[in-house]
Amino acid sequence: MLLEGLAAVRADLGWTYIDADGNWLFEPIFDRAGPFSEGVAYVELKGKDSFGYISNPIVRSN
Image 1 (cartoon, rainbow, N blue to C red):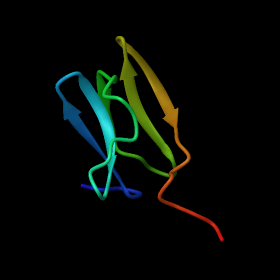
Image 2 (cartoon, rainbow, N blue to C red):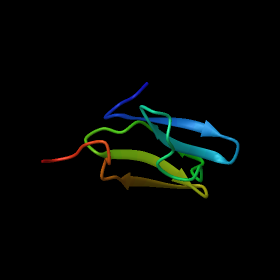
Image 3 (cartoon, helix red, strand yellow):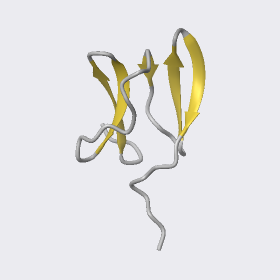
């Protein structure tokens, strides 16, 4: 499910995020990855909880 144009997906090496075209936004390095809400998502990296911030490349201002 895409939220804010992105979806968390599991790859062989870990979790990452993809856009509507299936392009990875990051290498799949996360142990866990939650959905984005207002530009923020829960991620776990190396057993530590964190909140990741993203500037969504899908949203462009004119």
